[in-house]
Length: 148
Image (cartoon, rainbow, N blue to C red; front, side, top):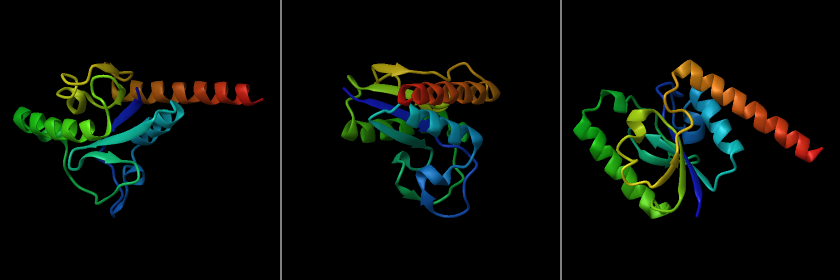
């Protein structure tokens, strides 16, 4: 059983091709990635509106696409592509998935994924940022104490 973190893409991006981990430059994405890393999961993936499931080191071009502007039918089709990709790299019935992703990015994935956590669910953007900062701070403090 693996632990996998899924982070949603964001609008704010670099203007040129880059590794996915570097392409997205909003505070929410940066903090989500830092928190995801602090969880020490087996893998972290980005849920991209254009590229579906991407690795952190996958080189991708910037784009202007969001699930927020897609119809339900388009979002369901996108989710099916993501699930197809996930099944190649994970066990959707037994692995644990932590979603640091907006509701539209996870909604049609959760019907297939059995074990998951939604730490940012029901939080507005400002609350998500506060939660992530708080959790990163706690984990950093805990890590320093264990090392000392």
